[in-house]
Amino acid sequence: MLITPQNSGLDAAKRLRAGLLGTRQRLAAAAAACARDVSDIRLLAVTKGQPLESIQAAAQLGQIDFAESYVQEALQKMACLQGSPLVWHYIGQLQANKTRAVAENFDWVHTVDRERVARRLHEHRPHYAGALNICIQINIGAELGKGGIQSHELLPLARRIAGLSGVRLRGLMCIPPATGLYDAQLHHFQQLGHQLQTLREAGFEVDTLSMGMSADLEAAIAAGATMVRIGTAIFGERQ
Ligand SMILES: *Cc1c(COP(=O)(O)O)cnc(C)c1O
Image 1: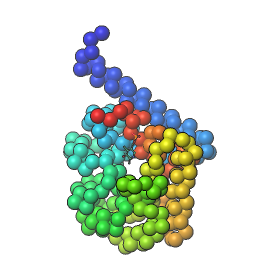
Image 2: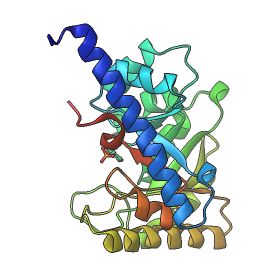
Image 3: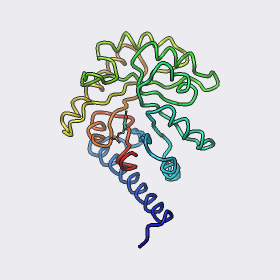
Image 4: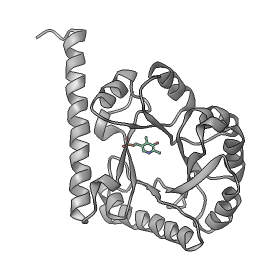
């Protein structure tokens, strides 16, 4: 059979459908395995490096939450998708000179690891938009060159952020070292869960654990993830 643009597009749509439905099934199975309600776990479709058509196709299958890592790429996609009631999550490293665009266009930021960035997000958040939901990223494996604070820095940072009305601290996010081993991932995710507990005991009303990617979502859910960020398992390899 000749591969025309039309039927290769059809194949792509079929693959995406299989990827998304398969991922939803993985979430449901992982939740059932630890007696959690799957509706307590939000699936974020990570669309960095994926074309606009994939976002549209996923949205048509009921996907609401989308996550991007590069501001410019995300803004271009958003401009083409205006009118769709999608929720946008920023999950990339945040440079201070990009905070305005992020504060104006995203609903969530998962990667706050400095007071300065939180303060700029607060300052740039438009009043009509309500407070920007943010998570503090913890460098849970203490890896060199990776974003995120060390655990002992959490309470001081959370306290400084608490007074900023333009942002609302919702919880914690991590990207542990990718070991491919369930127990190692679980260990790191449980540590993030303990840090969330620490925040709660200090009086913060936080409800979000953003953790788990394509390779380790089961361990994340077992450790209490409320948001998993999934790219390749839904969409295939990035371009
Ligand atoms: C790319 C990315 C993901 C998705 O990773 P997959 O392995 O493709 O599921 C999740 N979180 C962050 C922060 C990312 O940058």
